[in-house]
Image (cartoon, rainbow, N blue to C red; front, side, top):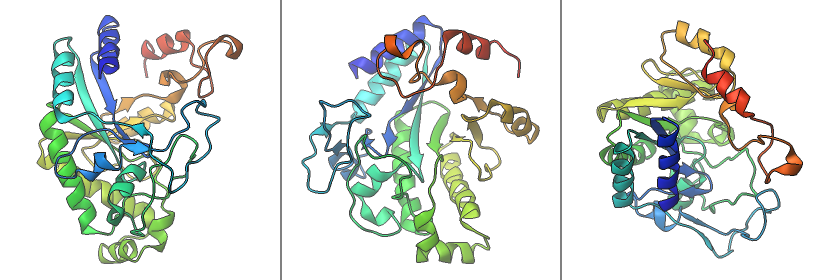
Amino acid sequence: MDYVKQVVDRLAEHKINTLHFHAIDDQGWRMEIKSRPRLTEIGAYRAETRLLTWNEVVPNETGQFPNYGGYYTQQQMKELVAYARDRGITVIPEVEMPGHTTSSVASYPFLSCTGKEVIVPNGGVQPPFLNILCAGKESTYEFIKDVLTEVAAIFPAPYIHVGGDEVTKTNWKQCADCQRKIKDEGLKNEEQLETYFMARVHAIVKGLNKNMIVWKERSKTPEGVIPMIYKNVNETPGVTADGYNVIVAPASHTYFDFYQGMHSQEPLAYGGHTYLSQVYAFFFRRL
């Protein structure tokens, strides 16, 4: 948390007033949820080869000792919110769903379509990730409500980001519960099931008096939800013309895990280039 506070200090120096707090992903669950303790007992830890760089790591295997992990307590997160508020910064939490949730499924296998036990993957496991939340079980939505209720109580921001990106629907196509839900709701396919899922989550978020943000994907964004465009900035005019407020954060200009100069002169990065001039040109352009 000391490092996160340093990030807040840097944001304040640059007059940036929002911290998007992405604390959930396949490789770890980082937020204490008291009603679902296994999320941090199991989902916050994984087996990791810590002496290797991220691109050298091989996938972990069942039975390996989970030697890496941790999570933020609710008290720590409340302290972060107060620390950021004192510096003019709002903290918006993100809880990924229905994809990027292997850490959730590892904690509670009933959340998946198969119900099988899985392990929290390390950095050597690459997409697609198949262990996503089952959209056909009502227990999934009960889980989501429990989690988001606690998250909403910790973060006073008027927004909750619920992810929604990179949903690999392989298991949905083979799941009896998902196929039953498609039939019962009069849906045509798994793409529409994803839209149905996000609409159910939106109802939960609205019930908590929050606005919902999602990553802009192929499936239809429910009315009243704020799509976050991260792939193609040219999508923006069409999305706003459909009546949506949007957040524009394309990888081409706002992903800072890319190289910022010559590869030979910088630490190992994810790939691609984001030059400082690109960033400034993006923020001062008129869409």
